[in-house]
Image (cartoon, rainbow, N blue to C red; front, side, top):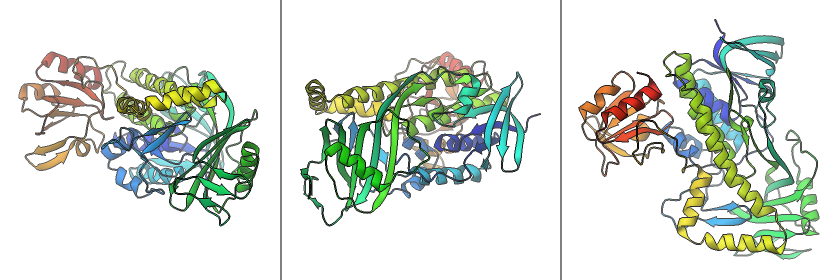
Length: 497
């Protein structure tokens, strides 16, 4: 008999999202976080990509939007020292919201604990052991050391994951020497901002908006909010930064001086942070009853991607883990977590490593590469494809039983009409249940799914297929117009006979 069903180590966005998803599936998670309170050092400053659609499907997106600190739409995004312009698209292929990680974690904590998840702060996992039946965590808490057992343990404890180390899982890759320092500051009187975003400084004269490269690093300048400057420096530093030490305005000013050779006046800080890039991926996401998600499983050397990939790990894992714990999982279901998300993580590494190659060169050849790349992005199809890659919306999983073009893709939020009135795909997935959606009144295709998944009949304009079998994570497990055998195969593969 175990104390809980799942131990989650780490109360960042990945761990808290996993806890909430497990509760929706009827599983008892316990979240253990070594810090006594939420971190105050600024980290990620936004959400982008497919996780926004997932939050919409769980009914959380409006609550996230209420936390937005920079209401300006993200119609341009940086990619390895160039900019991808999305203003030409009526529906941008990469969506983003500017939300501070501390605020996001507060919302997700409220969501998870409101569903019944238990969170213990100031409780550090210092040992992990497992056997064929359970996994045991040795925990150091405020009142001493104790043990807690569960059927599974998931390490969501960051890039330096002790859980990953204790499980003996390798983490190959590269840590780059560059240190990035970010500041969002008010505009002081001694600084003039031109209409095109350039600034005029007393000591250095005019500095253009965008990227300024020097022999010692890169200075980036922009504005997301009226009256606030966004400044970033990038310079090589062979040492390892300490994430727990807050950055100061003096540190940012010193870095600017090293990169540009002079001072830039800085106003009051709104946000200060620093980070170092690594490109690493765990050799495997599962070792027996121990699994990894988020930064414990992958580190990406670019901004705007890691939270999207990490929280998406959680949504993929939770329903499979719940099925395993509740004894209704088909053989091999839990192994598909590694198969699907390791491939998705590798694809995220592909685009983020490409950004490293683009941004790190400082010679004439590197400048030429960036210039050619920027020209290619003037083509709408190239910009759309790159944005979809960064967003993770081009992820497609292999699905048994279906050769339909939609199988393995993320389900669109179709507007639906039912006997009870108007609804949508997002409404059907609110409780993280699998759904067979019959859009053509096909009783022979509904029959095999009865008792295994929620069966819904509706009408939609321009229906993409007669029937869609949708997993709890929003991916289409089967789509078709009449192949009953293929549907039965898909149902058996994902939800049992």
